[in-house]
Length: 181
Image (cartoon, rainbow, N blue to C red; front, side, top):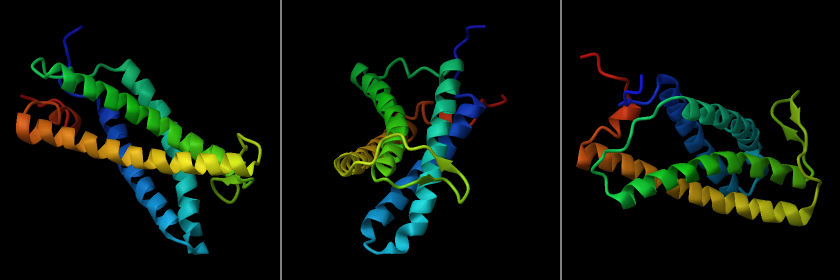
């Protein structure tokens, strides 16, 4: 049965929207932590760490789902440059979904701090404590967060372009399942 699909699988759609909410929350939590110069942002950090690890685990599941389920093709009349941009932006989104939590984990490790997910769950350090490495990773985490935010905005703009301007099935393929008609 090799008929092309017109919609993403239900699990793929659920993971997409769950992770979209989590990642947007992470970006705002991170911005809140950076904007705060007081120690009152500790609760944000305690939320940021486990959410980052959850995103890391979910992106692995999401990638498996993506590789094992059929995805709808882009419209045949989509210009080649736009099709390439769609493909490259998806690669970038997946790379950032992997990289951001790993860099955050490495950054906390390099700071010599425990990577606590809760009061009783501690992750192993993935790097030795080193102030220079911490500073480098902190900058990388910051600049990649900006790139992530811009990439998400571009992704959203492309989705709205497909839904409101082109009025093709691209946006609908992620919004709802197959129609029963």
